[in-house]
Image 1 (tube, rainbow, N blue to C red):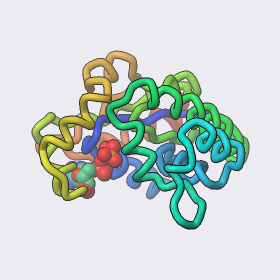
Image 2: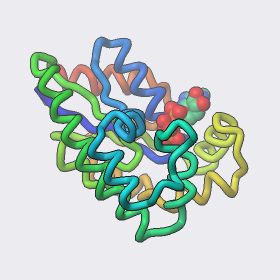
Image 3: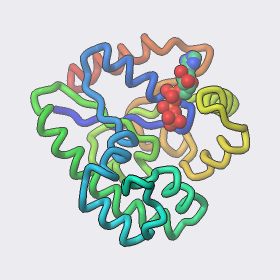
Image 4: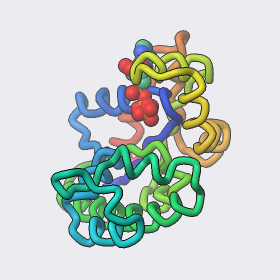
Length: 196
Ligand code: ATP
């Protein structure tokens, strides 16, 4: 079974591309979603986070308030490193368990916005980068999340550029307004099925 990472900056369209692979019967591990779930589901993670950031990041029900947590670490490199040091190893372990359940698949996808930045590229055999022009990515993210251009740009600053990601990828999907997505997805799917 081949483990394939799929990445791309904010608004690049990687989630949309993953949905296309899902329609072809491919299982996708959504790293961001899974890491959010682990904050409360994994007792050890929760405990470490409270120990590191204090009770102030809890909501009234005693669960981790993701908004408060992200406000605490946003723009603070040291705190972000601490949080990543807790969450990334837990997600990596959870992913390995998920992989075992899919060991009979031809290939699986691991979707992660910060695949390279988090070092999770080392957990996969191949990488697909979804890329789009910066202006289009900004426009799409603004519309989807109802946020300002400045907010999108500040999130982009924490991510590698597409060029850097592409250099280390085996496949690239161009999600611009000129190239159709479906034929690009089908081509990569056929290559992966054929183990190429
Ligand atoms: P993030 O990392 O921020 O979650 P993403 O790479 O997963 O972003 P998507 O959520 O897939 O990006 O796409 C961003 C927005 O742009 C979504 O609302 C999606 O529907 C839209 N979008 C993506 N690709 C296209 C396209 N080819 N045509 C029209 N809309 C698109």
